View (tube, rainbow, N blue to C red):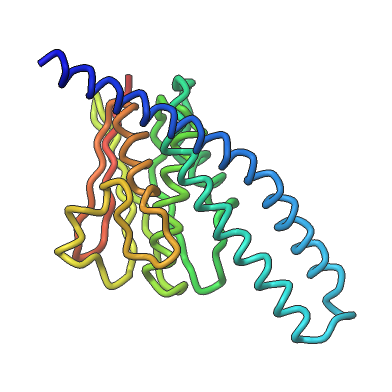
Length: 224
């Protein structure tokens, strides 16, 4: 039994070291990618009437692929880094408006905010990560056109938030797996986005789950 416990501790130590190494590498990669994205965006904007169509398309491709890498790095960092939560009270609308500003949407995407605006005790940076993931996934699932409806209800002790989209839904075989680490149906995904969402919500002593008809992600958070 002592040997098994020692083996278990050694495996845990290895996982911790792997997590620390991964965190350092991804953090170092994030900064140059930010520079690439910003410069590609700036050159594309300033050269719109100077470059030919093919050159502008190539710049757009550089920006798009760099953003994909950046989001994958964010997924890894969000999963392996677990600093203490900085809890403060924020309004749901303030959180969602900041998230929508950060999320790439098109004129074909309509996002409806909740009619009410409950106050939530949370780490706003962490909760923004959750909503960025959910809204970005919804946009991708809808084929970049459709409607996202966010509803909120509250009781004395809990706030429940539903993020519903008009996409085709999640296959029943995948519905129970989507929050598992490294599970993904995307060719470029890390499989850590929704796992990070679950981790963050559970650290807030809440719950998150998904259902179909229509596709809805439900988050339940304690008020205190």
